[in-house]
Image (cartoon, rainbow, N blue to C red; front, side, top):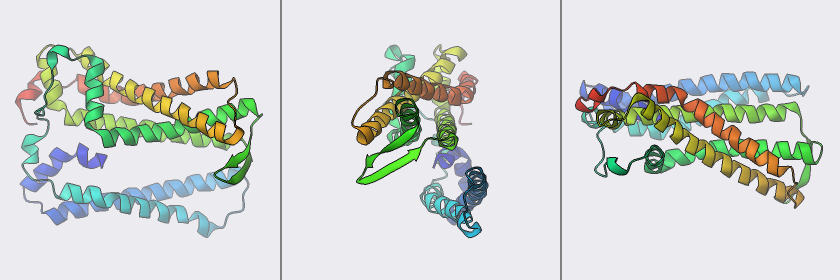
Length: 290
């Protein structure tokens, strides 16, 4: 879906020069299939490495399910974005970037409120990013607390089932992969947001915002995302720990802030490049369609 949002102007141009609806649909769906195949191959490689590291005996045909699963997930997930892209009218190329009727109250606009307004204007996209970051932060907080409070032994009753495992290095590897994917998602969402707001940012530059101001605005928007995702993750990790052990250890007072700041740092790092792109948008952007 983010790929469609980021290529809205491009797709509008293609429709304007003669591309038919079914052609756009096929191109976008083909892109999703290709991405699914690449994701499946990557998943197959990671599965092989994990199996070798843990010395597990897993049949090759089962490992091959990673390729099929990646293809199925991307194909099913790409149907709606492909349909949405195919329905874009050619006039989109002339409309993208227009400031909405709700407008900007420039007199009362601050860097924090500007970022918050944009996040609230895109609730589905914001919820998607927060969920990804919160899940990674919750898992990180839970593992760190278990490692400190129970010497790495994760056990208890969860959803009616007895759970027991010992925290190992690959568990932290899973957390790292989760944070990496969350960072990439934040970067893509922020990039799409900058593309959508080119003319809006051009207007802000025209009325006096400097490059550094725009840069800070985008970073603060990412800080809001990281802070909210980290807070939700810490809360989720605390609930999971309580569900397992019926108590919260004192170490949680240290684990919580560490994980929250880690989520904030990931959000800020992921937004650096989109912030640089936004800062380079010229004020003349408000006067033209490209």
